[in-house]
Image 1 (spheres, rainbow, N blue to C red):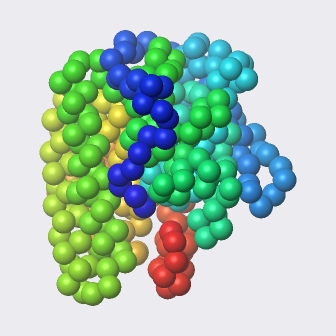
Image 2 (image 1 turned 120 degrees about the vertical axis):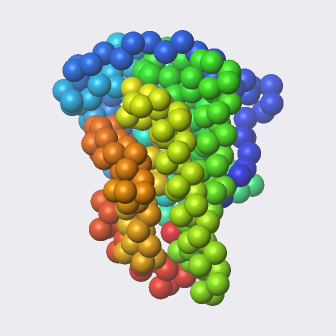
Length: 296
Protein backbone atom coordinates (compact mmCIF):
# COMPACT_ATOMS: atom_id res chain seq x y z
CA UNK A 1 0.00 0.00 0.00
CA UNK A 2 2.46 2.58 -1.23
CA UNK A 3 1.65 6.18 -0.42
CA UNK A 4 4.13 7.75 -2.78
CA UNK A 5 5.62 6.78 -6.12
CA UNK A 6 6.16 7.85 -9.64
CA UNK A 7 4.40 8.66 -12.84
CA UNK A 8 5.92 6.37 -15.45
CA UNK A 9 5.26 8.61 -18.43
CA UNK A 10 8.31 10.40 -19.87
CA UNK A 11 8.48 13.98 -18.62
CA UNK A 12 7.90 15.25 -22.13
CA UNK A 13 4.52 13.50 -22.16
CA UNK A 14 3.35 14.59 -18.74
CA UNK A 15 1.20 17.68 -18.58
CA UNK A 16 -1.11 17.56 -15.59
CA UNK A 17 -3.24 20.64 -15.15
CA UNK A 18 -6.48 20.51 -13.23
CA UNK A 19 -7.85 23.81 -14.53
CA UNK A 20 -11.04 22.89 -16.33
CA UNK A 21 -14.57 24.09 -16.72
CA UNK A 22 -17.05 21.60 -15.35
CA UNK A 23 -19.96 20.78 -17.66
CA UNK A 24 -23.45 20.64 -16.19
CA UNK A 25 -24.46 17.26 -14.87
CA UNK A 26 -27.44 15.75 -16.65
CA UNK A 27 -29.71 14.47 -13.93
CA UNK A 28 -31.91 11.42 -14.39
CA UNK A 29 -30.42 10.02 -17.59
CA UNK A 30 -28.96 6.50 -17.63
CA UNK A 31 -25.23 6.07 -18.13
CA UNK A 32 -24.11 3.79 -20.94
CA UNK A 33 -20.54 3.57 -19.76
CA UNK A 34 -19.41 0.00 -19.22
CA UNK A 35 -16.58 -1.70 -17.42
CA UNK A 36 -14.79 -4.78 -18.72
CA UNK A 37 -13.53 -7.09 -16.00
CA UNK A 38 -10.71 -9.47 -16.85
CA UNK A 39 -9.05 -11.93 -14.54
CA UNK A 40 -5.46 -13.09 -15.09
CA UNK A 41 -6.50 -16.56 -13.97
CA UNK A 42 -9.38 -16.87 -16.43
CA UNK A 43 -9.42 -16.43 -20.17
CA UNK A 44 -12.57 -14.35 -20.27
CA UNK A 45 -13.90 -10.85 -19.87
CA UNK A 46 -17.07 -9.69 -18.19
CA UNK A 47 -18.72 -6.46 -19.27
CA UNK A 48 -20.39 -4.69 -16.37
CA UNK A 49 -22.86 -1.92 -17.08
CA UNK A 50 -23.29 1.14 -14.88
CA UNK A 51 -26.60 1.98 -16.51
CA UNK A 52 -29.00 3.41 -13.97
CA UNK A 53 -31.72 5.99 -14.09
CA UNK A 54 -30.63 7.01 -10.60
CA UNK A 55 -27.10 7.91 -11.66
CA UNK A 56 -26.84 11.71 -11.89
CA UNK A 57 -23.22 11.57 -13.04
CA UNK A 58 -23.97 11.28 -16.73
CA UNK A 59 -23.22 13.65 -19.57
CA UNK A 60 -23.39 13.32 -23.33
CA UNK A 61 -19.60 13.39 -23.61
CA UNK A 62 -19.30 10.18 -21.64
CA UNK A 63 -21.33 8.38 -24.29
CA UNK A 64 -18.86 9.44 -26.98
CA UNK A 65 -15.89 8.07 -25.06
CA UNK A 66 -17.65 4.76 -24.52
CA UNK A 67 -18.47 4.58 -28.22
CA UNK A 68 -14.96 5.55 -29.32
CA UNK A 69 -13.23 3.00 -27.13
CA UNK A 70 -10.44 2.31 -29.61
CA UNK A 71 -9.31 5.92 -29.39
CA UNK A 72 -9.62 6.00 -25.59
CA UNK A 73 -8.45 2.57 -24.52
CA UNK A 74 -8.24 2.44 -20.73
CA UNK A 75 -7.13 -0.54 -18.69
CA UNK A 76 -6.82 -0.50 -14.91
CA UNK A 77 -4.75 -2.94 -12.88
CA UNK A 78 -5.90 -3.18 -9.29
CA UNK A 79 -7.47 -5.24 -6.53
CA UNK A 80 -11.09 -5.34 -5.46
CA UNK A 81 -10.28 -4.30 -1.89
CA UNK A 82 -7.33 -1.90 -2.19
CA UNK A 83 -8.31 1.69 -1.26
CA UNK A 84 -5.89 3.19 -3.81
CA UNK A 85 -7.23 1.14 -6.73
CA UNK A 86 -10.78 1.72 -5.51
CA UNK A 87 -10.40 5.50 -5.70
CA UNK A 88 -9.29 5.22 -9.34
CA UNK A 89 -12.25 3.00 -10.20
CA UNK A 90 -14.53 5.49 -8.46
CA UNK A 91 -13.10 8.36 -10.49
CA UNK A 92 -13.52 6.49 -13.78
CA UNK A 93 -17.07 5.58 -12.86
CA UNK A 94 -18.08 9.10 -11.86
CA UNK A 95 -16.54 10.42 -15.08
CA UNK A 96 -18.65 7.90 -17.01
CA UNK A 97 -15.64 6.37 -18.78
CA UNK A 98 -15.50 2.81 -20.08
CA UNK A 99 -12.45 0.79 -19.14
CA UNK A 100 -11.12 -2.71 -18.82
CA UNK A 101 -10.38 -3.77 -15.27
CA UNK A 102 -7.82 -6.48 -14.47
CA UNK A 103 -7.83 -7.93 -10.98
CA UNK A 104 -4.29 -8.54 -9.76
CA UNK A 105 -3.10 -11.33 -7.49
CA UNK A 106 -0.52 -9.52 -5.36
CA UNK A 107 1.08 -12.82 -4.40
CA UNK A 108 1.57 -13.65 -8.06
CA UNK A 109 1.78 -10.35 -9.92
CA UNK A 110 1.11 -10.36 -13.62
CA UNK A 111 3.80 -9.70 -16.19
CA UNK A 112 1.80 -6.67 -17.31
CA UNK A 113 1.91 -5.14 -13.82
CA UNK A 114 5.65 -5.76 -13.40
CA UNK A 115 6.36 -4.23 -16.78
CA UNK A 116 4.00 -1.30 -16.27
CA UNK A 117 5.30 -0.34 -12.82
CA UNK A 118 8.83 -1.81 -12.67
CA UNK A 119 10.00 0.37 -9.76
CA UNK A 120 7.23 -0.08 -7.16
CA UNK A 121 5.52 -3.12 -8.70
CA UNK A 122 2.27 -2.00 -7.08
CA UNK A 123 -1.31 -1.25 -8.04
CA UNK A 124 -3.08 0.78 -9.20
CA UNK A 125 -1.74 1.26 -12.69
CA UNK A 126 -3.85 2.89 -15.40
CA UNK A 127 -2.83 2.03 -18.95
CA UNK A 128 -4.06 4.60 -21.45
CA UNK A 129 -3.55 3.62 -25.08
CA UNK A 130 -0.66 1.40 -24.03
CA UNK A 131 1.06 3.99 -21.79
CA UNK A 132 1.08 3.26 -18.02
CA UNK A 133 0.44 5.88 -15.32
CA UNK A 134 1.20 4.90 -11.70
CA UNK A 135 0.11 6.08 -8.25
CA UNK A 136 -3.53 6.81 -7.52
CA UNK A 137 -3.39 10.59 -6.98
CA UNK A 138 -1.39 11.10 -10.17
CA UNK A 139 -3.88 8.89 -12.03
CA UNK A 140 -6.84 10.90 -10.76
CA UNK A 141 -5.34 14.17 -11.97
CA UNK A 142 -4.33 12.62 -15.28
CA UNK A 143 -7.85 11.33 -15.91
CA UNK A 144 -9.38 14.67 -14.95
CA UNK A 145 -7.07 16.52 -17.34
CA UNK A 146 -7.19 14.13 -20.30
CA UNK A 147 -10.97 13.83 -20.14
CA UNK A 148 -11.61 17.50 -19.53
CA UNK A 149 -15.20 18.34 -20.36
CA UNK A 150 -16.33 14.71 -20.08
CA UNK A 151 -18.31 14.00 -16.96
CA UNK A 152 -17.98 16.14 -13.85
CA UNK A 153 -14.56 17.63 -13.07
CA UNK A 154 -12.92 16.23 -9.98
CA UNK A 155 -10.60 19.15 -9.22
CA UNK A 156 -12.10 22.64 -9.00
CA UNK A 157 -11.16 25.30 -11.53
CA UNK A 158 -10.13 27.86 -8.93
CA UNK A 159 -6.37 27.52 -8.16
CA UNK A 160 -6.80 27.98 -4.41
CA UNK A 161 -9.62 25.46 -4.19
CA UNK A 162 -7.58 23.09 -6.32
CA UNK A 163 -4.58 23.43 -4.01
CA UNK A 164 -6.79 22.85 -0.98
CA UNK A 165 -8.22 19.68 -2.53
CA UNK A 166 -4.70 18.38 -3.12
CA UNK A 167 -3.77 19.21 0.47
CA UNK A 168 -6.61 17.17 1.91
CA UNK A 169 -5.95 14.29 -0.49
CA UNK A 170 -2.36 14.11 0.78
CA UNK A 171 -3.65 14.42 4.34
CA UNK A 172 -5.91 11.39 3.83
CA UNK A 173 -2.99 9.30 2.61
CA UNK A 174 -0.48 10.39 5.24
CA UNK A 175 -2.67 10.99 8.30
CA UNK A 176 -5.55 8.56 7.83
CA UNK A 177 -4.52 5.62 5.65
CA UNK A 178 -0.97 5.24 6.98
CA UNK A 179 -1.86 5.21 10.71
CA UNK A 180 -4.94 3.08 10.01
CA UNK A 181 -2.64 0.49 8.50
CA UNK A 182 -0.37 0.73 11.56
CA UNK A 183 -3.39 0.17 13.80
CA UNK A 184 -4.43 -2.85 11.74
CA UNK A 185 -1.11 -4.68 11.38
CA UNK A 186 1.01 -3.20 14.20
CA UNK A 187 3.38 -5.73 15.77
CA UNK A 188 3.05 -4.35 19.30
CA UNK A 189 0.18 -2.95 21.34
CA UNK A 190 2.06 0.34 21.57
CA UNK A 191 2.31 0.59 17.81
CA UNK A 192 -1.36 -0.28 17.37
CA UNK A 193 -2.40 2.24 20.02
CA UNK A 194 -0.36 4.96 18.36
CA UNK A 195 -2.03 4.15 15.04
CA UNK A 196 -5.45 4.25 16.69
CA UNK A 197 -4.87 7.69 18.21
CA UNK A 198 -3.55 9.12 14.95
CA UNK A 199 -6.43 7.64 12.96
CA UNK A 200 -9.08 9.03 15.31
CA UNK A 201 -7.39 12.45 15.21
CA UNK A 202 -7.43 12.36 11.41
CA UNK A 203 -11.12 11.47 11.32
CA UNK A 204 -11.89 14.39 13.62
CA UNK A 205 -9.89 16.71 11.39
CA UNK A 206 -11.68 15.43 8.27
CA UNK A 207 -15.03 16.10 9.93
CA UNK A 208 -14.06 19.75 10.14
CA UNK A 209 -12.63 19.73 6.61
CA UNK A 210 -15.92 18.38 5.24
CA UNK A 211 -17.85 21.18 6.91
CA UNK A 212 -15.49 23.77 5.48
CA UNK A 213 -15.10 22.37 1.97
CA UNK A 214 -18.75 21.41 1.42
CA UNK A 215 -20.13 24.78 2.61
CA UNK A 216 -23.16 23.01 3.98
CA UNK A 217 -23.64 20.74 0.97
CA UNK A 218 -23.42 16.95 0.88
CA UNK A 219 -19.94 16.32 -0.49
CA UNK A 220 -16.44 17.71 -0.12
CA UNK A 221 -16.98 18.92 -3.69
CA UNK A 222 -20.25 20.64 -2.74
CA UNK A 223 -23.32 19.45 -4.60
CA UNK A 224 -21.27 17.00 -6.67
CA UNK A 225 -18.58 14.45 -5.90
CA UNK A 226 -15.08 15.87 -6.29
CA UNK A 227 -11.42 14.99 -5.87
CA UNK A 228 -11.42 14.64 -2.06
CA UNK A 229 -14.59 12.56 -2.20
CA UNK A 230 -13.12 9.89 -4.46
CA UNK A 231 -9.83 9.88 -2.54
CA UNK A 232 -11.60 9.24 0.76
CA UNK A 233 -14.17 7.05 -0.99
CA UNK A 234 -11.58 4.31 -1.43
CA UNK A 235 -11.51 3.96 2.37
CA UNK A 236 -15.28 3.76 2.94
CA UNK A 237 -15.53 -0.02 3.36
CA UNK A 238 -12.34 -0.13 5.46
CA UNK A 239 -13.62 2.59 7.77
CA UNK A 240 -16.94 0.79 8.19
CA UNK A 241 -15.09 -2.44 8.96
CA UNK A 242 -12.66 -0.89 11.46
CA UNK A 243 -14.67 -1.88 14.53
CA UNK A 244 -14.70 -5.53 13.47
CA UNK A 245 -11.03 -5.47 12.48
CA UNK A 246 -9.48 -3.27 15.17
CA UNK A 247 -12.11 -2.86 17.87
CA UNK A 248 -12.35 0.86 17.11
CA UNK A 249 -15.44 2.73 15.96
CA UNK A 250 -14.26 5.58 13.78
CA UNK A 251 -17.54 7.34 13.11
CA UNK A 252 -20.13 8.49 15.65
CA UNK A 253 -23.49 10.17 15.23
CA UNK A 254 -22.50 12.80 17.78
CA UNK A 255 -18.78 13.24 17.03
CA UNK A 256 -18.77 12.88 13.24
CA UNK A 257 -22.33 13.46 11.96
CA UNK A 258 -21.12 15.09 8.74
CA UNK A 259 -18.87 12.18 7.78
CA UNK A 260 -21.62 9.70 8.59
CA UNK A 261 -24.01 11.58 6.31
CA UNK A 262 -21.35 11.88 3.64
CA UNK A 263 -20.62 8.16 3.75
CA UNK A 264 -24.27 7.26 3.40
CA UNK A 265 -24.80 9.64 0.50
CA UNK A 266 -21.58 8.71 -1.28
CA UNK A 267 -22.09 4.98 -0.88
CA UNK A 268 -25.63 5.26 -2.22
CA UNK A 269 -24.55 6.71 -5.58
CA UNK A 270 -24.58 4.21 -8.43
CA UNK A 271 -20.96 4.77 -9.55
CA UNK A 272 -19.85 3.95 -6.01
CA UNK A 273 -22.25 1.08 -5.38
CA UNK A 274 -20.89 -0.95 -8.31
CA UNK A 275 -17.31 -0.63 -7.01
CA UNK A 276 -17.25 -0.50 -3.20
CA UNK A 277 -16.74 -3.96 -1.65
CA UNK A 278 -19.16 -5.48 0.82
CA UNK A 279 -17.94 -4.75 4.32
CA UNK A 280 -18.47 -8.29 5.64
CA UNK A 281 -16.53 -9.78 2.75
CA UNK A 282 -13.74 -7.27 3.22
CA UNK A 283 -13.51 -7.93 6.97
CA UNK A 284 -13.40 -11.69 6.47
CA UNK A 285 -10.69 -11.38 3.83
CA UNK A 286 -8.62 -8.92 5.88
CA UNK A 287 -8.73 -11.11 8.99
CA UNK A 288 -7.58 -14.09 6.98
CA UNK A 289 -4.69 -12.16 5.41
CA UNK A 290 -3.66 -10.67 8.74
CA UNK A 291 -3.52 -14.16 10.24
CA UNK A 292 -1.36 -15.27 7.34
CA UNK A 293 0.71 -12.07 7.48
CA UNK A 294 0.48 -11.80 3.71
CA UNK A 295 -0.36 -9.03 1.28
CA UNK A 296 -3.72 -7.32 1.53
